[in-house]
Image (cartoon, rainbow, N blue to C red):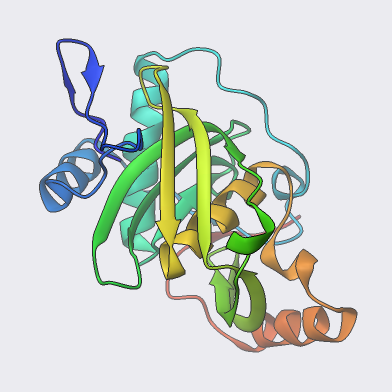
Length: 212
């Protein structure tokens, strides 16, 4: 999302959705330059398996966390990252993700809630999905190819974000994280077992936090 304000106002489009496609490269680089990359928590770490706390303080500490999340996301070559994936128990995620039209979206959502879609808008996309917290594993998972998330920006302003295709999947995936769900929790037992086997056999390309 744009996260850029003019006289206290957030840029929104004609439908009231935050503009998150402008100056993506510059904004992502600025976040990352201020941040410090942290290791990624992996499946089994307790912080990933419970609902996170609401963000209530929109302060310098939150701003630093967001900067660190962008730095961590870049190091791990991800397109989205939730705070609990770097061990922080707060409802905030960042993203730098293309949609199916190749348009880049970059932003932050605090306290996200997925809006219910009308039945006619629930067109499922059965594509491969992966997760930085389940490194080297992938599985096919059907999700709606359109998503709307409401929440707050880094300053506490109310926002709505919409996504299609791959970006819709990202919004759903990261919101799931903050409520204690990994994508493998939505798989069948056999598919989940296969994903965990892939993880066990693979070697992550980024630093992870060992589970005790």
